[in-house]
Image (cartoon, rainbow, N blue to C red; front, side, top):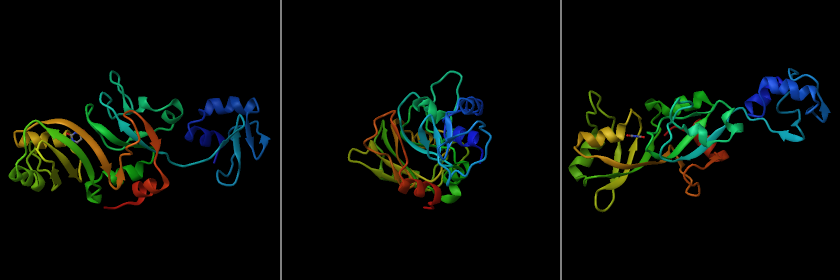
Length: 235
Ligand code: URA
């Protein structure tokens, strides 16, 4: 692998910056400064340092973000703030994208990665990756309506796949678990029973739970265990 590719994948420097840094003697391979950033190295065996900082190579990055209200789930948007704006420059340079969409006013667990294959697999309904949301509704939901939602409702020409609902006391809040993610799905499901979502927060994605210690807008890397769940899990 080329040094400049490694540094760009790790969000440390663009290829052009790497070329300059190499000329300045700021990049070392096994303790020896290199003059050319297109040199090939073994990312596992060779020790790379940039301005004295050891660079540990990882092919993909997996981030858990506690999405606040007011951010769109996109990598770029001409007008709105995106979830990528909540990450530091070094992470933004890694070509990360949100794994699935949450509406601008939906909160909670969002995974960002640059591992396209795993993200695609997690989002495919075929793999039955469960996503659980805590919700509040403007009107109480009856047992009959909950069953209706669980079996599937028409959200405008599309019948939703079976889901599960747990209602809290009072019946205006609870948890809903889906294996798919159509546009505004939960909001449209509630509209199908003449009700309205007033609050929506994703609390789990597969077996990965939203870290309660993350404040809104905060992020962290997935742990090794969570990465395994994301990469390899089938529900
Ligand atoms: N369903 C919705 O309606 N909105 C979301 O953000 C996620 C699921």
